[in-house]
Length: 480
Ligand code: ADP
Ligand code: MG
Ligand code: ZN
Image (cartoon, rainbow, N blue to C red; front, side):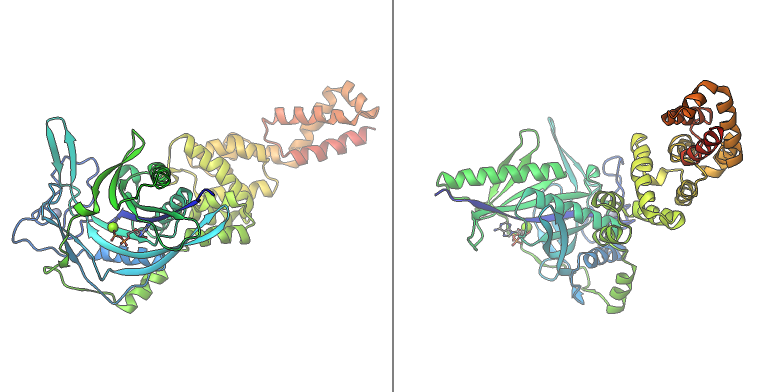
């Protein structure tokens, strides 16, 4: 019988913290588009005799992220030196946390087709980033702007069993870190990177297989592809009677393969020891309690609430909770419209659709949550038709940021939703079309559609269709 293999995956995620300055010095933490090597100082360049100083904001952001991942925060933790020599590391060591990290033992939930799955988090710790090397034809270029950037490393338990689960986990972590403001997790700027630990074992066997580590993936797509590749490679190797060796591999995005970089025998001894230049870290209970209170409702809880409380579909709730500012915009608009379902639909189809088309973010949107809420209120009160709201009015709101009422006034659309005005118009159209009125009288009541069409055309879609129907039925009925 053919053996069926199960894949076991654990992820290590590096996320750059969104602090003002670097981890242990006062250099700007934003090096995006900056000239190489200008965003450095004696400390992050590792000059002898300089002393690091712990960035308080970074510790706060790490602790908040850890709390959002349900981690335990021990009272004491410390920094350690991880020694290795490489041109991207001017100090000759990285400052990380080894045996006593700032947090441990957390978990998050991911939503899979088969249901909710809990993924364990071993630890979240802080460290500083290395510089960046660019291998050019003439030699290697070193840029130390990134050197000393504050990172969180989030290590998962080996709880994932497919590329889908690993990607869902990574996306959920990204969402949570963004919600709590600990990292922007902008993958295009290298703010979030993944290392995959992956092994296979015959299904049903408890012991883990030998793991392979694939380092430095920088997109969800490459994360997925590298896992799929490794599953295939390891399964084929085992089926051929080969033994998997513990090694570190790299992902070649162009070739679509992983390639061996070093085996366990060649693994470095980092000679970890406590960082002598930094004091131990102490997390006070009161402070942790205060952070906890300030953590916003997290994406999964929000999504569940939207589904239950507002009767939103899975998809509607998922889109709205993708980002915190989006969710808050929706919640604000919905309190004004008092119709969360319609607000959700309007936001997802119209607002996000328009923003997408214009490549704009919600932050750049001219429509305020109040005005979106009021627009829906006007529809629900029968003041404007759905079509008009979706058409002219929305477009004008989107372009100018004006409220629906201001636009209606400016464009003279208001009176068209007025019953008296619509009646006058209906009377005029009826008077102009005696032949069709005749047909109606003779029992061909479907011709009412002609009159509705005329009304909508004359009002440029401004009339409330329900009102038009009612008025026409009444007037035509009186003719017979
Ligand atoms: P290392 O000391 O090599 O860094 P760790 O035990 O710290 O190894 O684990 C690192 C990561 O590898 C964690 O995310 C963990 O869940 C995962 N991991 C550990 N053993 C396995 C395995 N056999 N298969 C897949 N992933 C594993
Ligand atoms: Mg590791
Ligand atoms: Zn510096």
